[in-house]
Picture 1: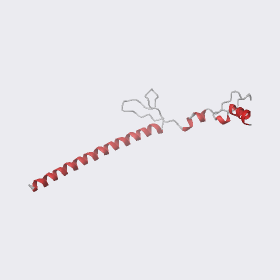
Picture 2: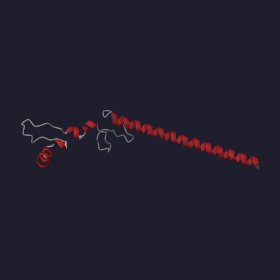
Picture 3: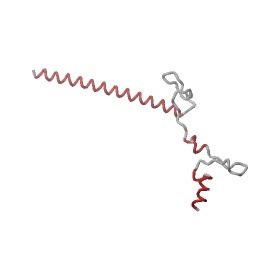
Picture 4: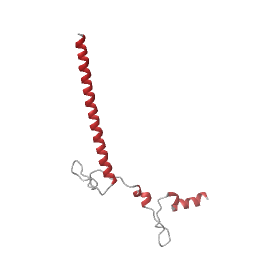
Length: 115
């Protein structure tokens, strides 16, 4: 009887070790897939000139309504794009300043109510 219990324990331990090895292999495969997906996404974002084929045979970065957008550069933000200087005629009416503290309205308001 004692021998049978030891045999049973060894079988259980062997089954548990097999299950553990199976779980480790699944995690390893999952991690590899995630790393591969991350590398592909980084490649898509890092160089907009490179077009990578997706699994569904659409070319990313083509702008064909795929729902995926490339990451924009910080220099493309409107704060840096819409800054202009005074117009050539000198009246300043066409002047657009994206900074509220430097706008004509703010300057007039400060002169009228604060100073």
